[in-house]
Length: 547
Image 1 (tube, rainbow, N blue to C red):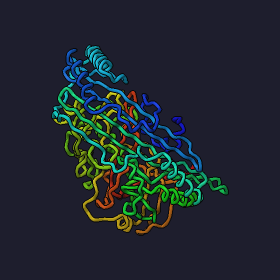
Image 2 (cartoon, rainbow, N blue to C red):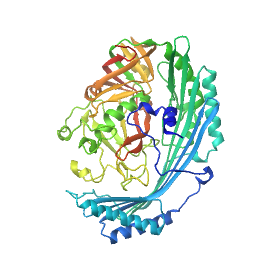
Image 3 (cartoon, rainbow, N blue to C red):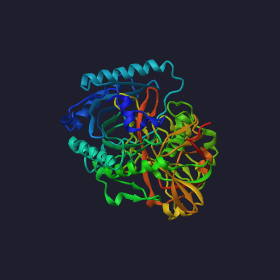
Image 4 (cartoon, helix red, strand yellow):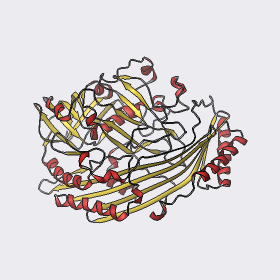
């Protein structure tokens, strides 16, 4: 599949910080071979010990080894046709060492005792060469030795075991439903990831993990030939850390929200959503254009996740705060001096944001991160105050902490691991409030569903967000659909305008399958949860007007 084609099919081009989650070393593979293990755990342990011993004998004071097998599957259709079916596999080992207080890294797809030994020797040689330029030695936070442990995404159905025909039939059925309801064009796809990761370190940890993620999607377009207008609507699915059971579309996971639309929680009905999308896109074309001004916004979780990602997730990454990293998402206005005051007013007292690498069903959920730290949940924003950052073993000493947050990740065996965004989520409100009750309390507002385009500056401060479905709220009631809506604010003003958050019953996950960072660039999958939330007095512009 070509890069341009994949971006068009999945609608990823709208998100500036997103990138393709494709390993540069992935090769096509027969689908029948994807379920056959290449090495068992004991073979991986023996190979890891070869690397650990080789690096130690050459002077390494710390070594970690990652033996990884990465499987991807794409099934893509358009209208009545299958456009592409791609199965890829990437297998190899990455070895990271500290020598003379300096990092060295090397990787190879020669996963044999001799190949592993030579890769370890190359990593040590690189560290020794780098050490000539090192000003301060690496300081690693202590982490326990876990011995031989394992972790697996708690899936019900391994999506790679589901026959291709079943996936194709589902996608074509969804396309047919959209066409039946009046769509002119429809694309649909299922994208699967399985990361089989084995980690070993010179500190005595041997960690085997089996990680699964799934991204089903559809994009429905309608053309109004009389006016020449056209609109599109993406799927109301979320990328999740689940198996094929996410596509069961259970009745108990369907949510009837304000405006009468159906949304989804822990499972997704692709065919139903395709039909609804076609009908809603026709309404989008004939919707009333928004009048610019100040509105109270009611933001649904399928929309709010992106605002959380861009305005809270990225600026709380410590390497961006320090200016060590700026690729894809810039640096951060949440500088150390603000954190050191312990009273920087990030948002209203209702705003509590946590980072959590253990959340079931999330894209970032693992048992241990890619430098052998057991994952956990921690506070970033508490009662509206900035209280912590996202940091890993060689960073936490900078903020005076002794324990890594466990958010180190590499997109493949061939890339060096570094700090990546954990699942960052807005906590549900403590007051018992439903979205309907929230809307009933708004005099002049807009209810926004699903993320759209966005723009945010390099310090993650001034921003503009669009959306997909916009409903006008007048005197506590939904009055109809709007279009051409985008809202503008700065991060601090926006989160301080948060006036109400629905309770846990409305909490759901959204997320990014392919968040980009680094140079060379890497992709990370991350979820963001929230309940529907209200933000008062936000400036709304009309994106359809010309100057």
